[in-house]
Image 1 (cartoon, rainbow, N blue to C red):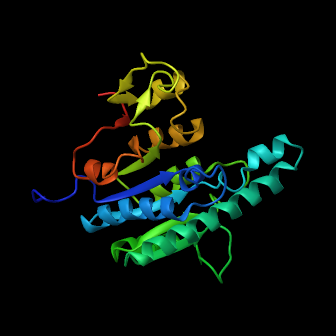
Image 2 (spheres, rainbow, N blue to C red):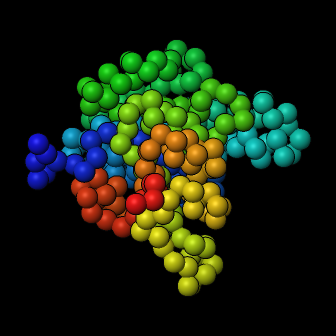
Length: 243
């Protein structure tokens, strides 16, 4: 039986873009911004929730953009995967400053800096209340970190994916450009795909749909927003099957 103070979600995956770590710099890592996100994760960890993360690499290198500029796509994607490892190590450092035991788990072997991905070992880390940061995507080119996040969340038996963005949910059009943009409280996977709402890439949304994994879209810029939703409050959009 749950208690009044129990979190609404006991195991979740937080997906954030690499761009979320660069602050106002336009490129690379902004340590105060990394620390701020780490504090959000720490506040959820303090509630007793088990947390894993996937962080993109677009603040350092994005494979698709490299490919568009003439680089061979597979090579470009592997470079993007390495960028996610750099971001994961930065987040690990920020979390451990706060006293949170953290493991970086890479889909590409680099044993000197990260553990290899072994599902049962990763599950055990979560059970021991360690934060797991899954890096290097799926380890394969042509797959985004959105797809990697959905895959890992499914493998870890997470109750939801939390997608941290610049806005407080999913809108029918860009709220930065349209004052009449409408935010959805709930929306189905199929509607996200049919309306091309860019919550996550299509393969990630389809994988979440096929496994009944809710996607919760919220604002990373709202202090305490992540903790609030875990506690059953806050402003967000939930993507799930139709009621």
